[in-house]
Length: 264
Image (cartoon, rainbow, N blue to C red; front, side, top):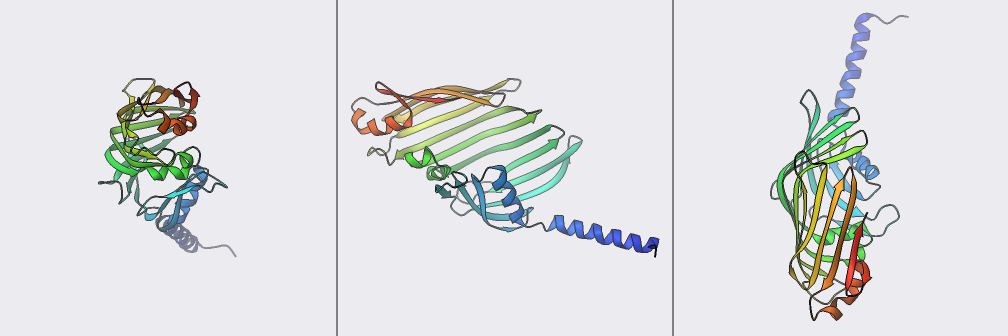
């Protein structure tokens, strides 16, 4: 028997209601599963609770599938996700809060499009424990750095278009009172790593410098069209060669009294 028009409308309303409820109350574990797949299990949200729109979880960094290296962020992570509209297109606003490390919530905006996506991050300041890096596996689990990571930015924009990426903005990372289990010297020193991508540029420049300390680090690099290239070196201050020999043997390719750092 054919369904009457009121019956069809009733079923349509029920279906729309179910879909709306599904979207509104989608569990946070769905977001956790998506992030784990997208990061090849390097970044995981454990014990996720709440919804994909408003939830919290323990943040775990790992060396990937099969790795035994793990590190958890103290006090976990909280998020708020809101869909919206910007510049004649869909957008999503995301607030991330880590009680241990972010004085104010990190504000991000994601704008997806056809073969295009843009991620905007508002100005921020934060401080993170360096031992969180050990969860990423080699070489961090061998070096086992200890200290404080201070990260700040006046704002950054990352764009993907037709398989190419582009960065605009700047980032300042300072590693304060850095130490490693591979050396008896504590601390090794304090260091600064900067990323600078002025408006209209084709890429970003990278710079590493020593602020103070016995382990001397320096280097320069660039990130263009999604390709990273960095060249630097590590050496010991006068009189500290023996104390830093083991660390220099592992941190890069040894060449005389220097250890060469190379990426890309």
